[in-house]
Length: 434
Image (cartoon, rainbow, N blue to C red; front, side, top):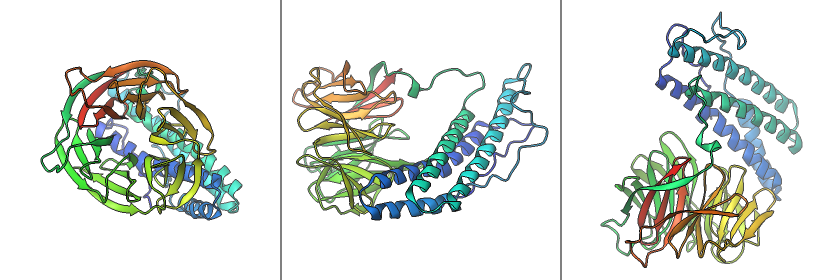
């Protein structure tokens, strides 16, 4: 359940502080936009599913959520506010200028709230027929995206024209620091299979040999260790908030998947999903659905948080690692040293190709510009591949003075940073250049 989104508490005489802007922005995004986006994605997946029970299981709570928990927007903008056409920023101080622009955006958000309520009414009057529900959800989804774009402008100056990292191509990668993730309590040699770069400058690593996952900050400080039931393989971020992160960890020898909550320096297993098959690769399609690749043999399944297989997405790809694009496609490195792109909704294999410039293709991650970063296991190099599977360039190489028997295993990305990890637990923090 989400609470109603409060109207920004800005008056006409004092400009809002940065903290006030961020609080209201976080409220809009965290409590409304993300939840509706997740429900829309869930319903789309359920309707594409071949399991009738999964459709009812997702569509009904989604509709209930949309009918009952939409934010209230009865508050009105202050009297005397100028329209967009009447607003004149000339001669105003920078702070006053920003204040007025924020007031205009607040009015736009309130208008979008009213449109959202109209969309909810359409859903309420419709039947539970899937086509009607999904049509209303798509309409609502578009309105929410407009709301998200307007809310994002809260943090931008009216005179700012710089493009965001998401709209700029990734040009280069530069090493900033490196460190080892071997810790004193390790009983065996450190063998890191996967790494995930988390918000708030933290890393989560799967140590296969020591049957644990490790939490570090990006400067190399060890924060915590969580023992697993069996050796962990791949990691996927289900969702993140301002204070915590939720991840899925595959346990191909168990079989099963750990759901782990990370908050500050603490980690705990909140759930163990029992599965009927053994899985290695994993990607979070939404917070309620996982794409999982078989630990041996060809196949990618779509499962829910109860471990039920909703359908087999693809039976012609054998993924080692997976990541998911902004369009909802899976990008996989495969057991036969290829890179593949698969549509979750239809199972269509967009491409499944070798990249001659990469000798032993292994870890994959999606950059903010949509390109694919790939580690070369043998040559200890990081490469950039286009979204269509075409090699672009080599971005980075492990320094030549490091262990010659170590291999560059996995990679993870955020908008501004990249992290690579070797099999023996050397972590390299890299800065993205746009």
